[in-house]
Amino acid sequence: MNRFLVIACLVCGLATLVAFAGLGGGRVAAPLSRGVPVTCHDLDFGLVPADDEAHAHTIRLVNRSARAVRIVGVTTACGENGCGRVHLDGPTEITPGSECRLTAEVKTQRAGPFTCPLQVHVDDGKLHVIELPLSGIGVSHP
Image 1 (cartoon, one colour):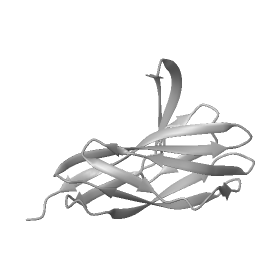
Image 2 (cartoon, rainbow, N blue to C red):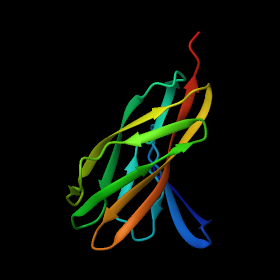
Image 3 (cartoon, rainbow, N blue to C red):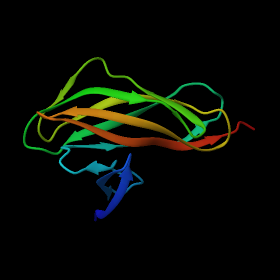
Image 4 (cartoon, rainbow, N blue to C red):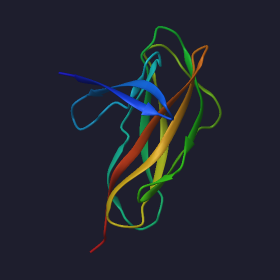
């Protein structure tokens, strides 16, 4: 059973409604901003070696609308204890009810939780920006 929690948050002084959907199995959908037809899944990398090497993981972008949308860009940066990167080879169209899979990479230098900011730029006739974190836990080698 999905659980929904709507949280009002302030981002740069603007109120934004964000919905989180628990999808079971430890997979959580990314924040769904009001009017944005795409949800992001599998953003948690789980346990990642804290060795400052790039570790790949697949994330999914799902089109929940009745019309095609395009992913026109992604922006990543370094965050708390980690740096992220997502590969997108130009604009990608997602048909209604379909998904697109992208390869994300993170590097973490020390043991402990990490987060890396990610922005997904979606065009459905309007440009939307979905802001969410790539996350996980860096673990030390024995």
